[in-house]
Image 1 (tube, rainbow, N blue to C red):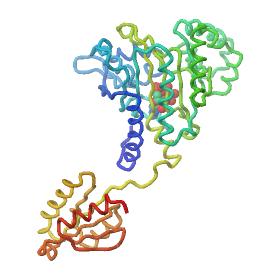
Image 2 (image 1 turned 30 degrees about the horizontal axis):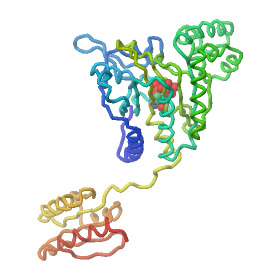
Image 3 (image 1 turned 90 degrees about the vertical axis):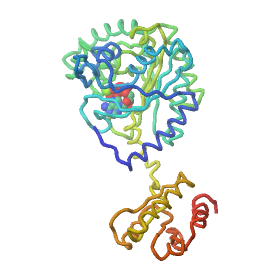
Image 4 (image 1 turned 90 degrees about the horizontal axis):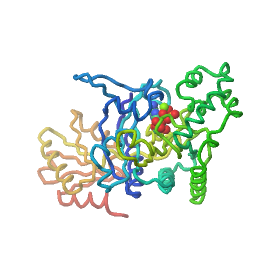
Length: 418
Ligand code: ATP
Ligand code: MG
């Protein structure tokens, strides 16, 4: 679990702002949900024999002995909130987004952490593929706005209905059992727990074996295959390249039909930056009326890794605009008062008062190495004449100003285009 410091967060904020702008342009509304939910909820929704529920959840008992879990993902809590607050009946909002930490007890490595941030979005109640397409367009727009679209590839698949997958699973298991001695430990275990996950194994030997195996596509009903093909055509029609990956399955049980991932080859082995899909049975499984749903989540740390590796947004962000220096303790009150007045008139400027016990030379040196454009020096001599000394650190000039003149100077420097 990581600590995040200002320099890093400056980059995060810029990325987040762009993502939020795009979400707003598709009429998504923000929701904020608890970090804790009942353990039972995740078990029921994500599936008892998935990696997450089997070995990745942080669960504990509260004082009354109820088992609670730090959320490993956002969809389940989001649906719980929608059902509990009767939002479906109100039929007002269908598109939501959230940003926050998720927790999974995994083996930490690059791009995989025990606390990580996801920006997720969920849409409810639209059962046609129109919304699948819109979500692909929206996520594609994220990457365009961030300037990374040429570094991400879309992989897409349809995993059909649960019934289709049950049939397929039986076939897949009986096929793989014939090759059981060649399977690695992970796949051997999955053969009896979650055989579909074997399909996306990174082990090349396993992929070789699978080449002759049964295909999920052949178990999916005709109309879904047609709808999926149409979706793929529409994605192309909008100029988005995709790779049909028949082996793409998701780690959570609740998905059906469309699933997709945006991947990058620039961030190491954990290469999926954004993943999502449809979950048309989840509402029912969680005790509500049948309602279709679709969503995705971006792993923010992985997105930031990619932005850093491409050196995007690497320009220095200004931490200070105006650097205020007072020469002696007697001038301190005025320094604070003047700074407050500047903030009243120019609320967006960053005004820094140097409160450190440093000599004047040192303070000026610090002002020069800061990102400030102006330094204001307040000393007895100037004060007597109601003046402050203002250094323009870029132009390397200095002038004495009265307060009103100072405010005009600030306006000229920061807001007037030359
Ligand atoms: P993976 O195959 O990478 O484990 P997943 O199928 O477990 O992914 P999801 O549950 O779909 O992932 O989560 C969506 C996204 O959240 C992932 O694509 C990834 O970007 C990010 N993510 C998931 N787990 C982690 C983690 N432990 N650390 C950092 N990011 C993560
Ligand atoms: Mg995982």
